[in-house]
Amino acid sequence: MNTISEEPQAAVWRGERFALADLLRAFAAVGIVWHHLSLYAPRSDLADQFAPSVGYFLFNHALYAVAIFFVLGGLTSSLDKRFIRRPDGKMGLGELMQGILDRYLRLAIPYLIMLFALLGLVWLTDRFGWPLDLIDSFSWYQFVSHLFLIQNLLGFENFSAGTWYLCIELQWSCLIVLLTFLANRFQRDHGASVLARTLLLFPLGLASAWVWSRSDRWEAFLLYFAAQYVLGIFLGWTLQGRLPTWVLSLYSLSVAGSLMLNPRPQLMISLLVVPVLFFGYWRTQDWVLPASMRWLSDVSYSLFLVHYMVNGLVLRILDSWSSQGAVQAAAGMLIAFACSLVAAFCFHRWIEGPWQRWIRSESQRRTERLKPIEGDQRPSGS
Image (cartoon, rainbow, N blue to C red; front, top):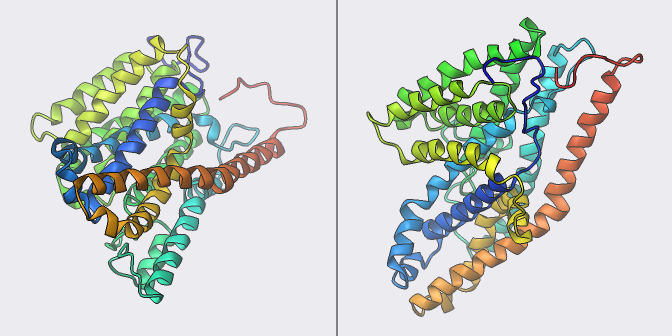
């Protein structure tokens, strides 16, 4: 495929799940949970004596699993079917604001339910003289900033471990909606819209790789991670046949060149994930993951949300036992992980899953209302 066409016949991936992406998502979610266990478990230093090399890896390297989520986030963003369009194919200001609101609600409602549960648990245990020490500080300004996922931008500490990622994810979602809106307003042709966004995202990603991601002062902003998200969105468009492979290759090589000046393991992992998913898609289309791994991929967001609170509670209950030796300390962390999986199952089944289905159904209903009475004969996806 050498050109960007309006409705490419060679497109293969149209947004369906594939096993390799699910597998990477599952492993990344587990890696993040165990990294936080290594960081915050009261007896993690004692547990390290049981398996020093494992403890060292979890503490120093497991955090790089988040790089997988950046690429997968970009991959998901490459699917334009998520955007609300009018019968004339254009996005108005109403569609722009609705797109941003949908993305906020998709992320924020499960997150806010977890946040209120965490704050309530901390307040309750403090009140009864049994502190969990999960939150270092609290202020109402900090609380309000958490409601809008801007706490990192304002310099506040996160109440729960890892939720800085959600702040970045929301920034990325808003940027993609805005870029799609701008490209849509000036280019009606679908292929031209992809080309316009490519011309905007390519330099943004390179600036991120060569400038912004080399300085920690940008960590609270999307600009620090944009190179990794753009890798994912270019990968998605390439798998869909909407972007030439050479564009993805050129961008990847340009980003890789920045590592010569400043090696960054997280960016390196994102670069490795792209060819794994690209070549793996063609070779693993018939893969059927074990039900447990597919389930783990399904509940990965719920696991990400609830694990810090659940781990803190379980490890506090087990503290007197887990402090007796390295084996007990390691076993306590394993029990906490198992409890997090159970909590993630419950959270996904009764909170995240129903909410995401409601969001999708509402978006579909709005789209149906926008369809012209006579029917729109323009190609799907345009």
